[in-house]
Length: 173
Image (cartoon, rainbow, N blue to C red; front, side, top):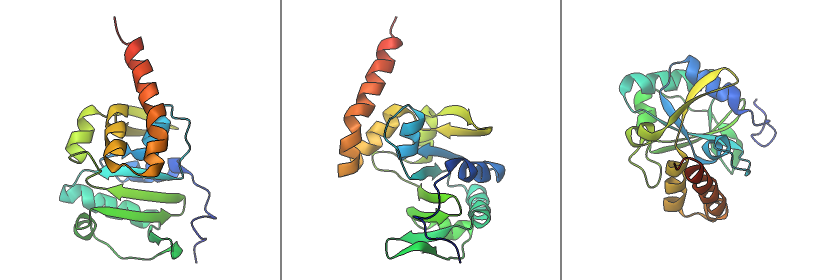
């Protein structure tokens, strides 16, 4: 039996490394993308938007197996085991999962966006602890959080807008 998700120390790097090692094409979004853009607000999960090609969904399925991903629900914080294929994963718009390294949320169409192609267009490439990845632009993170309009998003939006404004001011000639 796996430990409950609140007892699993959140460690995003192994999650990202497994996704990368399996060749999954994805963009990091949400709170962790904001952290990578210098947000001072901590997060307890990694949110991603994967490309929806069948080949990529199969790679994602293999990565989820390697991560021992389970469906997360508040009633079952340890997660509910599930069998999956790439096709099955692509049939749901959102997956809330718990892995051996903490929470992983998959959203194929984040609020305020048109999914992977939209987010990938403005994403930046980066390397974190040797893991190459694509991170949604701060403007796209703000756009999505604004569209979601959840209380937790409303709390961080002023700070994210300040970070973006300061960057834009530095980049002006």
